[in-house]
Amino acid sequence: IEMSGRGPVGASNRADLFTSRSDAQSTGRESKNDEYDHKHDDVDDQNPLQLEHMLGYAGDYHRTILASPHDENVFMKSLGSLVSIENLADPHSQTFLRGHDMPVCALAISDSGSLIASGQLGTKNFKGCAAPIFLWHATSHRRLAVLRGLANKVTMLAFSQDEAFICGCDEDCFFYVWDLGTSEVVFGQKLTAPATVLKWAEQKKVGHYFSYELVLGIGGSINQALLSYDNFRMQWVMTFKPYQVPPSGGLQRCFNCVDMSKDR
Image (cartoon, rainbow, N blue to C red; front, side, top):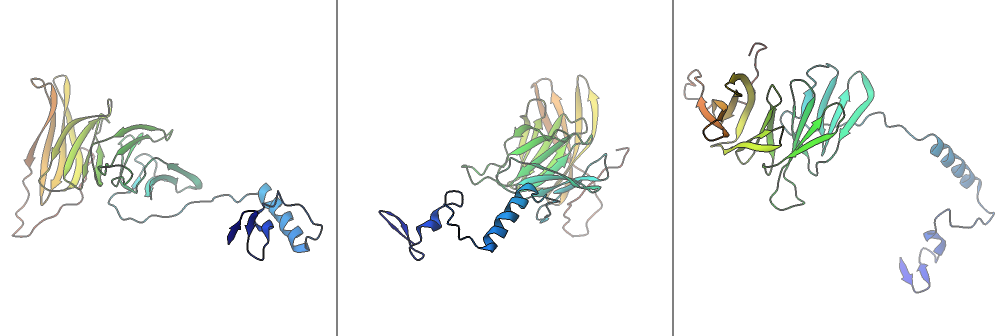
């Protein structure tokens, strides 16, 4: 299509092709097909199609489809850069949590079911490939905080039982613990290998603070990670100690799943 100084030309010199229907003047020579189309356009405007459900789940990332701990019908999953909250009992019940600019690759839900955390691949819109973690309220679907520190790809997320902390790992072997009250990092360390297992195991009161035990799979070993508050340093510290496991008989183990019994 060529553009002249007097207006658009081309397509048999029909300048009216570039004029919207509302701007074009009626010539009185509209065909019956045009009248039919106009009539049905009006009907479609009055009765728009309703979205029944948005389907899709690639399953490219570990633990990106989770069930609600207190409602057997409610579940959440990653849907590209969205988090979709759905209900098996009601196909019309579907809520999207928006905000990520890259695919969501990690999800976690607190034991009470009131908090949701979602992590993404490293952003391509800013330098550094930062991979933020979004904290959501499960009922109001409101974003509560953005937790920063990880990069390239969030691999795992986990809430503490009392919902005071959340920890996460990325593919560069970095491990962080955030205080959910302040959204600040209280502990961070680079591991010797990418973490494959992450689970809060036990908590107990020690003085004025709680002490937390985590199960952390690093490479081919399962480790006990103890998070406690150091009164002398006035900060949270973590110590690591491998669990005793049966001999592997020369085989290289890789742990990718862990769970706890009801009585911990």
